[in-house]
Length: 196
Image (tube, rainbow, N blue to C red):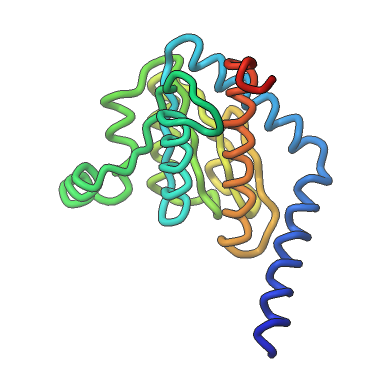
């Protein structure tokens, strides 16, 4: 296969998956509902935690830095924490097993009124499922960005979005778009002066 043809095919596949996601009006409504839920957490001075594995952890970290830093315009930092500390992960994995790497910090830090974002392209990552269970035990809300059929995680989420796509990369491309849109609309709700 010619490399230019292959590249074009990859872009068209990504475009098709995005169009399928946009074509479901429930997805748009869920993003709006989630932005309002996140705004409410921040206005109550709660925190948003995020976790996932591999590329999903990178997206979790990306969301948190956009909140504590800035997205488009300057505004006060928003309290978001990605559960990606290497020291904690390696300590917990060594002493308690990899399945506990996200649950334990939530049991230590999570409070009622906080929110957890879980990212999983399968919906079945055991350590992310355990994080959602730990969050619920602490009185937190859970928002899921999932793939496939939502997997086991779906039942532990207060709100979730399931990205279409047959591969992790295509699912993650939808997830990062949703995270960017959420940050933008949290800002629009909380800092309307930054949006004219």
